[in-house]
Image (cartoon, rainbow, N blue to C red):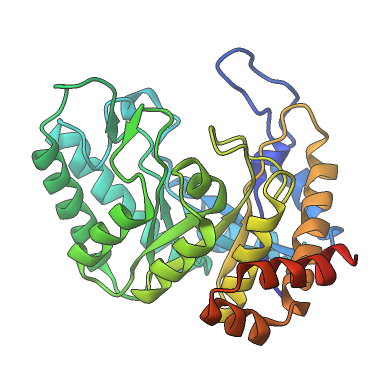
Amino acid sequence: MMRLEASRSAFGSCNDRFMKNYKQDIPFEKQMEILRDMEYVKMIPVTYDPDVNPIERRDYMAKYGIAPGTIVVDTYSKPEFAKGTLMSRDPAMRREFIEKSKKAMDFCKEIGGEDIMLWLAHDGYDYPFEDNYAERYGWLIDGLKEISSYRDDVRVTIEYKPADPHIYQYVSTAPKALCICNEVGNANMGMILDYGHALVANENPAESVALINRYKRLFHIHLSDNYCKTDDDFLIGSVTVWRTLEFFMELQDIGYEGNYVLDIWPPRMDGIEATRVAVRRILGMWEVAKKLPHDQFKQLRAEGNVPAIYDMLTTEVLHI
């Protein structure tokens, strides 16, 4: 069974740059009640908050049968982060964020989370000539090395995304994120592969799985879909059905056993119903991918026989 984490963004107001509060936030207590009754989803990401007692939060969630998943370190929602965190030009901000990440690792260990997640949203740039690229990469590597070296019993994951909110993000593609992780060098330093972000980066997500897994850096998966232009956070498989099936096949073939976050953002939908439908689609498409004749695929790939591959897909998936 896939280990599913429900993204709490589906229960939020889903603001964008044109409108605030498409709908009202659902209180945390109500979210627990909803998830308690939602089949197959037994984990949620938890945002690190120094004012929250991790043991009390863990025990409270356990009453509803929900466990902590990834521990989210807020890198994006506060004005002071606007000019960067680990790559800020202000050394005091870099130091503040490094210490914050270390405390989040302690929080993760106490609450029983899977890892800490770093999406470095504001560590990017917009204009030519704006940045000293080498200097800022140096700050990034130094910061991640210090954070991941703090304790080796908690994993640190970075999430790559090519753009948004900046025009250019430094941690933007699978190969760049791999270079960063490999230079840091610690075994607990890894990556989140967000299916939607891979599409926007003009990657084939299944290929990205194979590449990241080659270096043992695949720690977490985010599931959403889009039209390969912007991070729409649609229901998985709603746009790129064939790529989704190939993605799931590749994950099955490598034996990935980590978590899958339902990273959907449905501003105009009922978030609860969207989450239920997302779960059904994920599990359904996972089973379709699992039932495909993987060994035959491998043989046809070895032969380079693309027509035969699609003839088999037509039979196995479309049943015609």
